[in-house]
Length: 312
Image 1 (cartoon, rainbow, N blue to C red):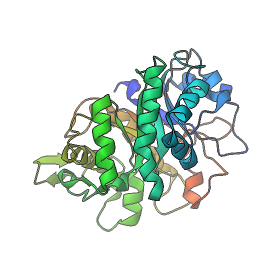
Image 2: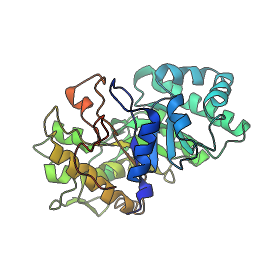
Image 3: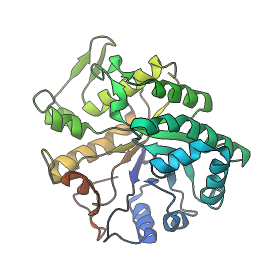
Image 4: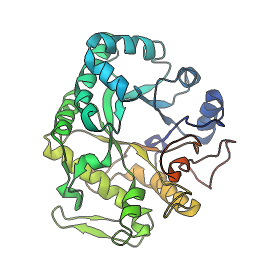
C-alpha cells in the first residue's frame, strides 16, 4: 500500500488543540503526507512550507463561494492573498470550492470554480486543480453502484467542467452513516472492511466486499453518466466515530480506518489503482456543532496520543 494514497483532514474546531507547527510535525513523524484544511489558515500554511505534504485547501464557507462566484476580481485577490505567498513551498494540490454546499448556494459552485481556475491560470499557477467537495448524497440510485447518477443537474455541469480541466471530483464518503441509518440491510463487517461479505452488482458483473468501494463506484458511475468518465475521484473525507452514537466505538473506528489505509492503494473494482483518500479527522474537535459523534472522529487526542492503535 503506497502511503501516498492517504492524507488526514486537519480541522481546528477545538479549544485544546496543539499549535499548527506541532500538528505538522505530528503528520511528518507518522509519515502522513497529505492534509486537508478547511480555510486558508495562515499559521498552518506557514507551518507547511517545505514539508512536502500535499494539501487540499478549502476556500472557506458558502459566503466565500458566493464571493468567488460574483467576480473574477474577487477570485484574483483570493489567489493573490492565499496561494501566491505559499506556493510552491506549500504543496497545494487541490483547491476545494465549498464543502458539502447545499441549497441555493450550489448555483455558485461552478461560476466560483471558473473564476478561480482563471485566476490561477493568469497567475501562472495552472497546475493547481480547482474542484468542490461533495456529500455522497449528490448521487442518487447508489445501489447497485452501476446505477449511480447525479441527483441534480448542477453536478453534471460541475463534472463536465472538471473533465475539461483535468481536475478530480472531491467526494466525502462515509459508510458509517449508511450503516447507522440502515443496520438491518448493511452489515457492520461490510461497512468496516472486515472479510466475509460479497455483494454482486448484476448490471456490471462486479463483486463488492466493502461498502466503501460500492459508494465510490456509485460516484464513478454518476460521472460516467454525466459524460465525464475520465474524471478521477479523490475521497476528500472518510472516517468513523469512536464514541457518541450507534456503532461508534473505538474498535469499529480502528477497524474502519485501518481497513481504509490498507485498502485504498488497490482502488475499487471499477477503478483499480491507488485511490487518493483523506481520513477525517486528525483530532477530536470539542467545539464542532451537530450530533455528539461529530466530536469523536479523531485519530489523535489533543495531547497528540493515538485515540486507538493505527498504522499508516
